[in-house]
Length: 200
Image 1 (cartoon, one colour):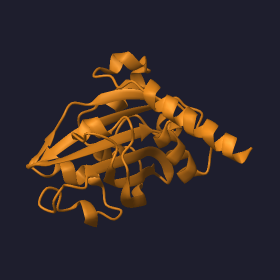
Image 2: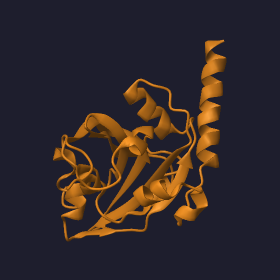
Image 3: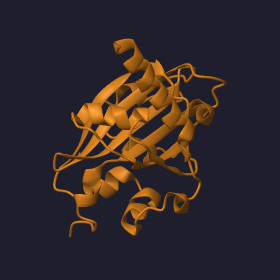
């Protein structure tokens, strides 16, 4: 019975990945005006969050080698699902988790491509990317991730809760020299409850 349950869960996750559609325009999501502002803002998400809370914190969940997701490998010019460098964090405003962020870098990337990536710890990746003039930012893509999408499941595990979904997400490809880096940001339910205007 347990083997059957595992197979069913794996099938559900695979189907969720296949059903995930990434859009080049936020209108494809039918999101609220408030959520659209979070999704489309071109400024650093870290800076935007810092301006809307008293205490901002990056909580690193993991940094490791892992198998790239089925809806990611083509974005970073990989021919198939292989191992990549992966980083997972929660962005917290006044200790409330508001964003789950997932970053991948091909194993072929060199230290000169992303010299800071392995040393970030609990520092913000976004601040580093936006502060480096050699980093070129690609176009944002947008999606609604269903409850069985691997990133929603990982965020739920980190929080110790069940996330019903769908959750709004965006992703962006960054390039530095010959190196590629893909950042996906999943907006958690608490994002709706933080202040919408910057602090005075």
